[in-house]
Image (cartoon, rainbow, N blue to C red; front, side):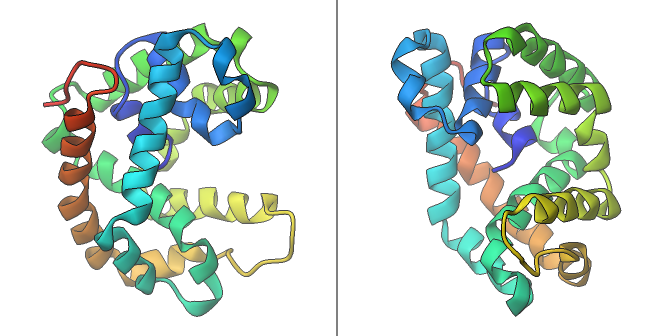
Length: 198
């Protein structure tokens, strides 16, 4: 899953938000130095990713991406799922999205001093430029995915993923709506950070 979904599945604390995003920044060797509240968030991040990557519906969704982009379909699915979480936010949260973003950005900013350098850079940009505003539209997620394509260290044909998303929008939305409640249930069942999502 991508950043918004990880934050949605975190607890409303700075340590949980830090831990639930930390898994995307390669920190396994530093884990033992982290407070248990951050480690629990990190474990939750890995739980979410493992469930997502092995889920039948998510694997099935990769077929909606053209052959030249299939190698990075998982990345595109993560980002488009954040888009669908925004589109259907009221179905999954009683808190308005604007309030959630404001709180989340504040909690993340509280932990910037202890984040790894690359995470500091990403989180500073995310909170300052409100990345999740970009995710509201297919054009916005297309731009985000094209930026990811530019950062891949080798020549690739991942750019233009928004074309595949636009062409298969309804099918991808249906996958998200079937999958995401199952992910919430899975996180609640393991309850690695104790409080449950409703």
